[in-house]
Amino acid sequence: MGIYINIGNEGFVSARNSEYVDKSGLIRVVNSTLNTERRFSCVTRCRRFGKSMAAKMLNAYYDQSCDSRNLFNGLEIVRDPQFEQHLNKYPVIYLDMTDFVTRFKDESIVRQIDTRIAEDVRQAFPDVKVMEGDDLMDTLVRIYGDRSQKFIFIIDEWDAICREFRTGTTEMDNYVNWLRRMFKSVNASTVFAAVYMTGILPIKKYKTESALNNFTEYSMVDPIDMGIFFGFTKGEVKVLSEKYGMSFEEMAQWYDGYQIGDEPSMFNPNSVMMAIRSRRCRSFWASTGAYSSVANYIRLNFDGLKDNVLRLLAGERVKVNTTKFQNDISIIQSKDDVLTVLIHLGYLAYNWRKDECYVPNHEVAGELSNAVEESGWDNVVKSLQQSDALLEATLAGNEEAVARYVDVAHDENTSILSYNDENSLACVLSIAYYKARNNYIIHRELATGEGFADLVLIPRKHVDSPALVIELKYNQNVDSSIDQIKRKEYPAKVSEYTNDLLLVGINYNRETKKHTCRIEKLSLIER
Image (cartoon, rainbow, N blue to C red; front, side):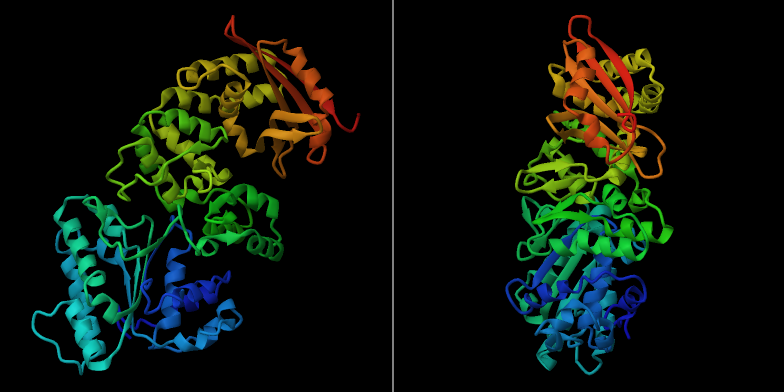
C-alpha cells in the first residue's frame, strides 16, 4: 500500500460502515468515459456536498491493490453490465491537494507534489527502469511502455492551490504548467484511462483561456449528467426522515431548494446527515467555511449588487450571467462574478433555464444574512437587526410600533429599492420581517381561494405563535387591507397550519411617506 498510489479502500469502508446514501451510479458515468476523448473530468461543487466521498468511492472501485466487491453489495452499480469489467483493475493515483497546501506555503509546493508522487509510483513498480531526472509524467510513460499499464488519477480539492495562491504568482504559474504537463501533453491519453478531479471552482481560465480545455466540466452551474450525484434527492431524504423519525417537511425547509441541472430539488447532503445525527434541524452551514469571505465579495458592491442581494434576502430571484466569471476568486470584476461565486460556494442556487439565482433554503438564508451584516451595509443591517422587534410588536398587536418599524425599514432601504408599488413594499416588508424566519416559514404571494396573500408567516413546528397574514396597500385605506384578507378567505387557506391567526394590514401613503397598520386577531376555531 502506497501513500499516493494503491492506497486501498479504507476511505470507502468507513462510508459504508456509516449511514450511506447510494450514489454509486456515478461509477457508471465515469466508466463511460474510460479511454475515450471524455476521459478527463473535473467535477466541482460546494463544500460538504460529497466531493471527497465520491472520490473515495471511485478509488475503492478502481484500485487494483484491494478487493472491493463486498463493499458494493446491494448498491446500484452492481446491476450495471460493466461493473465487473473495471472493478479493481487499475493502479490508482489518489491526491488530496489540501494535504500539500497545508504543508508547503512557497514555490516548492508543485515540485513536492511531483517528486513525492513519482517516488511512490516507482516503489509500486520497482522493476521498471527510470532515468535520472525523470519527473512523474516520464515515470508513467516508462511504466506504460514496459507494462502497457494505464492509470486512473483522482485529485481531490484540485483547486486548493488556486484558492491559496493568487494569479500571477510563481506558485500558480508552476501549478498550471504542471497540470498542462500531466493532462494536456501528448502522453496524457496514453498513460491515463481516466482522470477525475474534484473541487469547488471549475477550471481556471488562465490568461484568457482554460488551462485544461480537454476536460469535461461538471459544476453547480452546469452538471451535465451528474446533477443527481451532487446532493440528496427528495426520495432519498424521505427514506432517511422516516428511518430516523425526522420531519421531512422540516428537512425540506432547512436544506432543500437547490436546482442542479435538470434535478429540480436537491438537498445539502452534509446538513441532512448532521440533522439526523443531532436529531434536530438547525444550521450546520457555518462549519463549511467562514461567511466573512462571502461578506468580502458582497462588500465590493458592484453596480446593482446591493439591490440584488436585498431582493434575494426578500425571497425574490435575480438574473445572473454566469459565463463571464474567470473561475478565479481573486479576480472578481462585476456583480455577475459575485453572484456566480456565491452559486459555486452554495450560498445561492441557480436555475439554468431562466439564468436566475435565488436563496435555496432557511439554512443558507441565515448564513447569507450573517454575511450581509458583516459587509458594512449599515442601512441593511439596521433593518435586519430591528426585525426581532418588529415581530414582537406585531404579535403584541402594537399597530403604532409596527408602522414605526416599517417606516425605518423603508427609510433605510429607499435609496436602494424603488418604492413605487406594492411589490416594492412587499420586498421591504420581507426584509423587515427577515429574522422571523427563525420561527416562521415565510411565503411571498401565497395562493388563496381568490388571489394571493402578499406575505404569509406560518409558524414552524413546535413554535407556539399565531400565523400572520399580511396584506399590503399603496395609497389606500389601511382598513381595506383587513377587509381584503377576509374577502379572499386567506384565513381558510392557512387553517391547515394553525388555529390562531393575526390579520395584518399595512398601507403606505406616498404623500406623507408614512405607513399605517391595522392588526386583528382571528381564531379559526371561533369561525
